[in-house]
Length: 389
Image 1 (cartoon, rainbow, N blue to C red):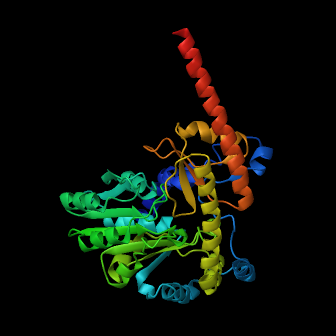
Image 2 (image 1 turned 180 degrees about the vertical axis):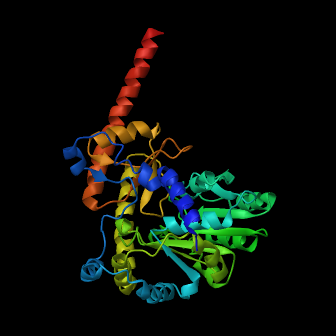
Image 3 (image 1 turned 60 degrees about the horizontal axis):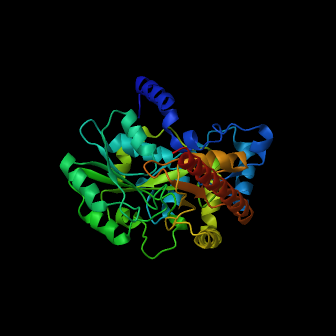
C-alpha cells in the first residue's frame, strides 16, 4: 500500500497526467466549438462508445443498490472479484479491477517499466499507456505497424531484446486501425519474449472481432506466461461511463500492479457488472451480430463510393479520405456528426465509431456531402492556381 506521502505524489501525478488520458482529452466534446442546441443533436461517433448502452438488467441491479450506497461495502468485494475472475476461468488472485481498463493499463506501466526498462509499442495505437510512460520519465520505443496495420511482433521482440527487457504494449484489435494481430503472430511473440519482458495485451475491442485469425491472449494467462491482458465493460457492454475494467495475469504480476490501483470501484458499478456477466452468454453474441451487420453495411457503401478503408474488426473503422482529416472532422461537426481525432502518421485516415443504423445513415449523408464539398473546393483552388500560372 502507498503511504500518505507517496499517495500525495500520485495525486499530483494524476492531476498532471489528466491531460494525457486520451479518450477523455481527445474525445472532442469539449473541443467542438458549437452551440448548446447543436451539441444536443450531435451524433457522437468519435470515442468508440456503444450506443446500445447498459443492458436493462444492469440498470435494475444498479437501481436496486443505490439506496444502500451510503455504505462502503468493502466486505463484499472479495465475492465480486471471485465471480468476475471465474467468468474468465481464473482465480481472484489473477485479476486486478479498476476504473475501466485505463486504470489497470496504467498500473501495468508503473509496475513493468522503469528508468532502465522501456515501454515498446506500435504506432499508431491507443496513446494512453505510452503517454503515461513518458509522464513517468520512462523511455518509449515505437515501431510502425505492418502493411496490414497491425503489430509487427518481430520488431517488438527485437526492440525488447535490444533494450534488455521492458513492457511490450499491444492493443488487439488495434485502436485506431481496427486491425487484429494474427493469432500465429501472437503465439510466436509469447514464445519468444526476451528475459525481463512483460507483454501487455489490451483487449478492449476483442468482442467485436469477426475473423478466425483473432484469438484472445487469456489462454496465455491461464498457462502462466509473462502476459497481462486487460478487458473493459466500456465497449460491448455499453458501460463506458460506469468505469469498470480489469487486468488478468499470474498472481505475482497482479501483486506487482496492485499498489498502483487507486481503490475499489463503486459498489453500484460492481452490481451492474455482475448483472452484465449473468447474461453475457446471450448478450455478447447478440450485440456482436448487430454491430457486425451495421459495420458490413457501411463497408459495402464505402466500396460503392470507391473509397478505401482498413478492414475493421472493432466497433470503429478507418476510412481513407485522401486529405488531412482535420478538415473533415471540423466540417462534419458543424453538420451534426462528431468523428474521431487525427492519429498521426495516418493523417488521411478518418476514424469513425459504428453507431446505430440511424446514426450511420446520418454519417453517410454528412460524410459524403462534406467530402464532395472539399473535393470541389480543392479542384477550384487548383484551377485558379493554374490560371494564374
